[in-house]
Image (cartoon, rainbow, N blue to C red):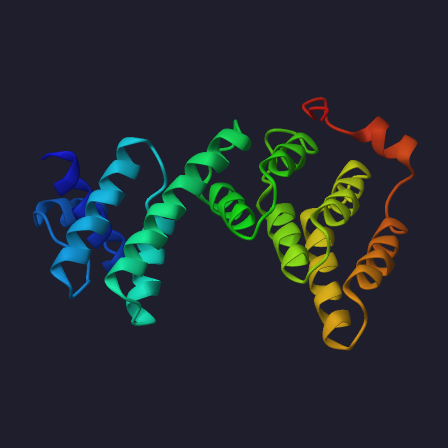
Length: 218
């Protein structure tokens, strides 16, 4: 089975949520895109992504999102192509992370304008065995709320350095969101909530003493 036909089968697998063996046994299938030209182009883009070792799930989801929103074929093609490029860029910036969640979060951050160097700083702030999906998601959320990326990065990495857990960092994002919805300025909300989380964490000396040896310095 060539790469293109194999990817088409994998697409069907993801969409139908069936086991790998039956999906391959059924032979090649196609994306559920009515426009034949769009379908072929998107399938080829996904095949190229598979050949480069990129995760297929985000690309499939992006294509299906376009179908659901009744986007034009051209817009679906462009969206999938750009996402593939961002996933590849995120893989380089977040190395050695390779999980679908981390690469997808990295691609989302890049899409909203977060500089690539900041992805590297987030990755460097935690041990390599720890997922950076949540910190990246919070960074993306804060930037989407018009908080300067550098300000958001500094607060998040400060919490990471002090030993904040993923749930504590997630609570920072949700709390800021609630504060902004209540009328507080985004920057002020971030500073207040970050101080609140920081007050619950060990001192810098204690955090440094308990930090895993795998932590990489920025």
